[in-house]
Amino acid sequence: MTSEKNKTVWPDPAKVAADVYKMVMENDRVRVFEVRFKPGQKTVMHGHPDHVAYVFDRFTLNLKFPNGNNQDIPLKAGQVLWIDAGPHAAQNTGTTDGYALVIELKEPKK
Image (cartoon, rainbow, N blue to C red; front, side):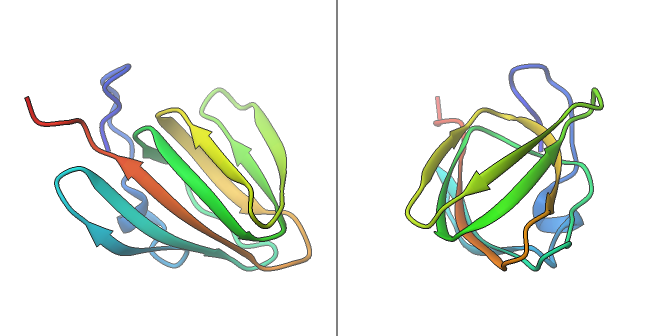
């Protein structure tokens, strides 16, 4: 995945985190992933373009960024998040299974 904001290439979650990210639909405008995290499960550093996440089940997600910073995000069912393009590694640091839908936006054709 290439971030248009900084032109850095980060690994595609569909390739490096296929145990968590299952692609359920793709066209020329979006990619849609079903995302399932078991407690303690983690992903390696990967990148996304701008995307939206819809949370189905409550869980706590820790995002780690390339600069070493990290952030715990308590998520609840029905929550919708806008997430700017960029890289992160992720881990379910809670005690419940995590389940979400991630919709990546592709750049419109010019």
